[in-house]
Amino acid sequence: MIAPTALFAVDTLLTDEEREIRKTVRKVCDREIRPHITGWFESGELPARELARALGEVGVLGMHLEGYGCAGLGAVAYGMACLELEAADSGLRSLVSVQGSLAMYAIWEYGSEEQKQQWLPAMAAGERIGCFGLTEPDFGSDPAGMRTTAKREGGDWVLNGTKMWITNGSVADVAVVWARTDEGIRGFLVPAGTPGLTANDVKHKVSLRASVTSELVLDGVRLPEEAMLPGARGLSGPLGCLNEARFGIVFGAMGAALDCLETAIAYAGDREVFAKPLSAYQLTQEKLADMALELGKGLLLAVHLGRLKEAGTLTPEQVSAGKLNNVREALEIARTCRTLLGASGITLEYPVIRHAVNLESVLTYEGTSEIHTLVLGKALTGIPAFH
Image 1 (cartoon, rainbow, N blue to C red):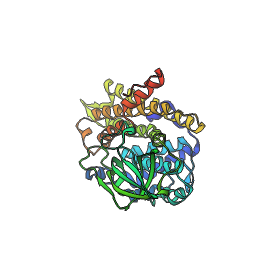
Image 2 (image 1 turned 45 degrees about the horizontal axis):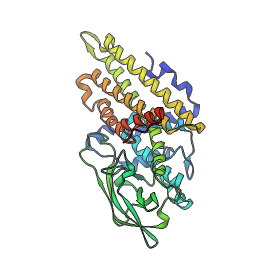
Image 3 (image 1 turned 180 degrees about the vertical axis):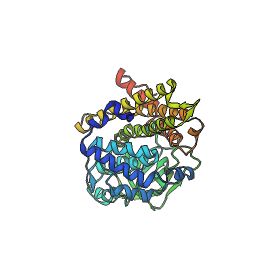
Image 4 (image 1 turned 90 degrees about the horizontal axis):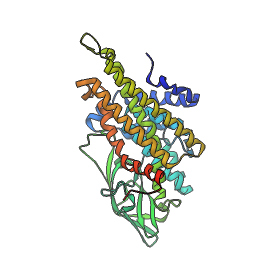
């Protein structure tokens, strides 16, 4: 028997540093996450602050950014960390992705030097948590229609509006909020506790239960001029952040798929059906072989996109291709693994159903599959078909 990834010799494409980072993150997940994740998922809770500090200690938060206490590592190293985090649970990778690739990246890329010094070192250490307020109740795939506004009043800005489906929202020390102004869409840093800011947790989730998901309500939130991110103007600001986060999903989804496949292989070897192991049947082996192929192709795609990112040549369309393919295939792998586990596949005794329902959310957020399909369609035809 060989590991599923060995069919494509994926590890040979990684540097020693990248393999070591993957091993380090796996150890953190084995120690801090896996013994507790079933309980957190079942109760719909996550000790986000404690986990942020643990992840900050090993340099995972904002690890692909340079300076300000960030590790400054390469894209593939960051991807491997995302893979191991999501192999534990998509909610954990979401916490890290929103912290590093959305909130921290927005400040790092578009913030003033004062904003960077104020927030980034503490966020890299996990001492402060950030969230990213772009999506609204009526505007997800079409962020240009956002209704949240920021209006000047004297030397201040006053924000009004509602943001929805905000990961880390109620535990965040700072929210990066995007709002419509007379100058176009601009980003603002809204510290927790600012009068008029309320965070309400979303209840009754079936997916991403081990993740903090919130509604942000801004009712006359007054901010000084220096709260604005000076380097972001228009939708290119938040979309640039989303592209960073989508890149991590390309790797992360494969982590969830790998965990499902490894679980299914082990289960099929132990489970006896008609006096021989389930893995001895041709239909079972066909399923396992097909899943290993899609997993391997997804991993090769992820590493290739990572090398393009490190070379500075990665395009948004290529990220869309990676996100579309890898999440779609990861979800199919999770569903197929569930069938191999039979009735056991619907219990939390095994991670498969948890990954499957989590991936239903991953399929939707950071751009739905339909939106990424249309991104590729536009790239291939030159014709935007979004409306």
